[in-house]
Length: 339
Image 1: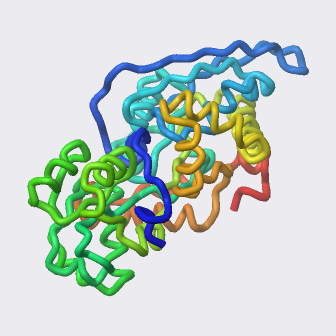
Image 2 (image 1 turned 90 degrees about the vertical axis):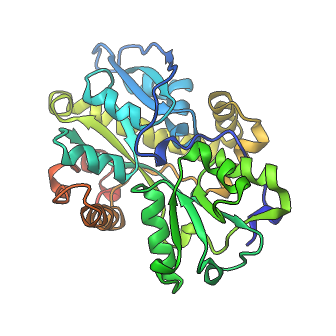
C-alpha cells in the first residue's frame, strides 16, 4: 500500500515515545476523584504520566470515563512533552507510572534504575520512512542518505529493515538528524529521506506533496512499537493491590475503546489536540492496540534491541528480563495474557 495516496497522514501526534530523551516543557495535570471501593477502603492516589499522543489513549480513557475510579484509584494524569520524561518522574518519586519503548527503558535500567515492568500496555506500527519520490522500493536506498536519530529505536528498526530487504547496511549513509530538523534538512537536499513518526511525517508530506512518498513496504515489516508500563520497584512491592487495580483498569479501558470507539476518539482528540476524524483514521493507520500483555515476542524484542545497544557501546550487558519484568500481578489479573 502507498499511504500518501490511500490514507491521510496527520500532524499532531508527538514523537515522544520513540525518542530517547527530550526537553522538558509545560506539563498538564488532570485529576479525578475516586470513591471508596467495595471493601470500604480509601482510594489510592496515583499519578499516571504520558505524552500528548495516542500511545496513552488507554490512560486518557480510564481517567475520563471513571474506570480508574471504579477500581479504587484516584487518578491524576500528568502530560510531558516527551513520554520518557514520565520515566524520569517515576524514578524521582514524582509519579507512579510511565511508559516507553525498549530503548530508554534499557538505558536507565543499565544505569541502575530500579524499575518494574508489569506488562506491555500499547502496541503500534507508527514508524514511517519518508523518502524522495524517486525512491520507489527498498532496493533504491542504496547510495542514499537517510536522516534518523542515532542510537534510537529508529536506527535499530532501519538496520533491521535494510537487512530484511537485502540492502547492505554499509551502502546506505546514516545521517544523524534531530527530529525537529529533519524536514528542513530534507528541504536543503542534505538527505534523501528520514525515519520518524507524527507530527514530523505529516509535516513533510504536507510541505513537499508529491515530491516525497512513504516507502513501502514499511518499518512495520520488522519492528512494532511497544509501550512498557513502568513503576518503581519499592512502590510496587508495597502496593500490590494498586498495581493489579491499574492493570484491571487498563484492560477495561481497552475494552471500552473497542466497544465505544466514538467516545474514545473524542477523548483522544481532546488530549492530543487533533480533529476527531484525524484521530480515528490515525488509530487505524498506525494499528494501535491497547491489549495488556507480556509474551515471547515482547521478550525477544527486548533481547534483540538490548544486544544491539551493547554492540553500539551504550552499555556492557543487557539487563536480564527477569530482573525487571515482574509478571505476578498480570498473572493474578489476566493469566492468559502473561507468558
